[in-house]
Image (cartoon, rainbow, N blue to C red; front, side, top):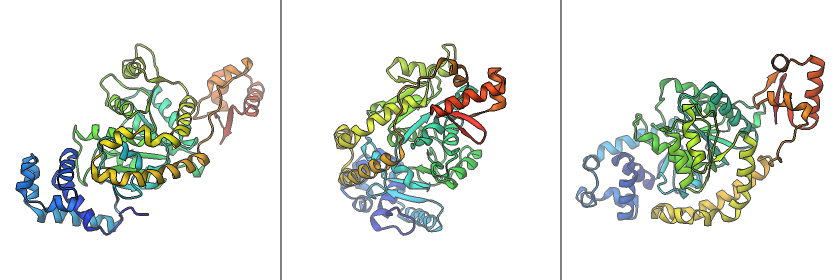
Length: 414
């Protein structure tokens, strides 16, 4: 592992110094790197040299106080030593290669939990902070199904759909499939926002998931930090699913960024009078793929994987060429290793997509009552009005056909 967990090299300290002094401004950081070539040269440059580049006056003021910068770096290094979080730099082998393909990759990532999740195939699920009960269930079931199929569920740790997506990915009967989620923060890695997210953060980390942030520790939420988070959610993922969103939802930003990165956007339809789903209907009208079952997502995304093995480099050549010089120099080596490891992992983890489900007519009613979360016998008897022997017989037929499974007394689709 090359991820930073304790001591920092001089180059890494210089990167942190710049990141602190420009207050995590991507444009200012890349302007300095482009102009000076190396982080240490940029940091050692005089304030007047920064001023000539048009660097903002607040950044210049911090650059005039190197002792404060060094004190903050020392605090970060102590936190690394204490194990409060980890740190990945863009030239680390453990830095997620897919982020190097976006237009403005962060030069570093703070993380908590299992950073290996960042290298596994991810699907983003995003949506409203105030979803309907139906959307919450769909989100949870989608996440659970896709995680069970081998994917990592990535979202933004917000209220509503994001939370349900993370929880759905965490609820897995098979211990080998637990912790399959990545949460991207819109605050510093040590800021629990909102306050009651602490329990979710802890659950993700303890079960083997990962939480990341490009922002400096102690960074509080701001209206500008969440769109930044959304580009990382899109950048990490092979595709994005929007399960329910209003027309002004931030989820549409994630969907737009996903599309701009050349990836597929999926949207869940709803009733036409559901104002909470206007964003999804807008996306579908604009060309997003309508889906109503997670297997449809698997069929499309799995179909991309064979293409990605041979065309990953060329498909992202335009974005890759636009990345700043200090990052693109490391991209080729990281990309090659990442594609190789991702391909090996996917071949062993991702279940092959099944053809369209064909259910015999006499079993259709019971099959339509089932979902991917599971129903017990009492609930099914109440819903179908079937006698217990008849119901059990039909469930056995569906199970023998490989269309459903029974787990802990609950029947669910597979």
